[in-house]
Amino acid sequence: MRILIIGGTRFMGPHVARKLAAEDHEVTVFHRGINAAKLPDSVVQIIGDRNNLRDFSREFEKLKPDVVLDMILLAESQAKELVEVMSPIPTRLVVVSSCDVYRNYNMLRGEELVSNPIEKITEDSPLREKLYPYRKEVRDENNILYNYDKIPVERIVMSNTDLPATVLRLPMVYGPGDYQHRFYGYIKRMIDDRPAIIIDENQAKWRITRGYVENCAGAICLAITDQKAADRIYNVGEPEALPEKKWIGKIAKKAGWAGKIIGLPRDQLPEHLREDLHWRYHLDIDTSRIRKELGFTEIISRDEALRLTIEWERNNPPQKVIVDSEYKAEDEACSGLIK
Ligand SMILES: NC(=O)c1ccc[n+]([C@@H]2O[C@H](COP(=O)([O-])OP(=O)(O)OC[C@H]3O[C@@H](n4cnc5c(N)ncnc54)[C@H](OP(=O)(O)O)[C@@H]3O)[C@@H](O)[C@H]2O)c1
Image (cartoon, rainbow, N blue to C red; front, side, top):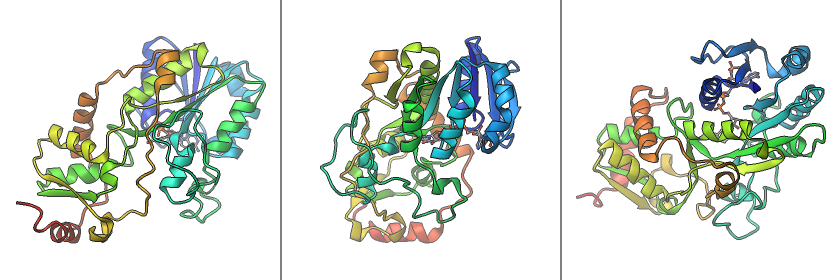
């Protein structure tokens, strides 16, 4: 197959490009040339900005991709442009979306407190009613996050009659190369041999579905290569979302850390650990549809995924450091609770 990837060089993308190339597909990645990835020689690169996607129409038409994978479709205007540019080509769109489309996400953030929590979110669960989740934080209209919303993106690609499309709702993705360093706060405390890791007692019970980077890439590849994925929406992620305390426990075991994981009421938490979230709203995603319909299974076990992620975080710490005053506040908060 001929596959055009918009993006493809930062986190999940290189795994997707490598796997497809290894399966003898003809892969082209389109990106700005800011994030470079080690890709096989057979992968063709087109350097360009998706904000000028129309300028590349001719090149895409000449390429005639059987599938266009869009890794970074973030806003409605981008989706409209994508559909317009790709419509003359007989192709299928595969779009990377997010589980932040579900209403539970807004309930977690206190933006919609209207219904009971959904314990297990399927592809048919209610979506957020309030759009543009990051507008409050990002006030600059020129920042892409101001207009970020995968709900209108999904609507546009799924309602277009010229092009079949597949939407993949990704979970919280972890693994080597995670530029959000989602594990780091825990791992750093383990490396520093802290006596305890403190979290909100409600967060200790909170569940979010995660997915290891290479496994998520595997799901994306399946959706590209299997025609059955046309006009379908799939949740992607690990089969079981562990309560946060258990998740930290798994990391601790792998990292060889023997400290305590302590849940405290919100008012006893140090300021830097307080998050304004409603922890009874889980983001626990049912991923059985992609498993049943496309035969998705994890390539890398969770055990190995944790090992590789810990190793990477140890060797690639983020710039933000934990300051002494944070540890001091944590010591005070759990004094008397550690023997
Ligand atoms: N990480 C998570 O936990 C998570 C969860 C849910 C959903 N997602 C979704 O996953 C997607 C991102 O995944 P990823 O980072 O693994 O993808 P990726 O394909 O590995 O990296 C992003 C790519 O986009 C390119 N890019 C960025 N801005 C561009 C622009 N204006 N024009 C052209 N290319 C551009 C980057 O290269 P250059 O910088 O060289 O242009 C890079 O190749 C997003 O759609 C995100 O919403 C992520």
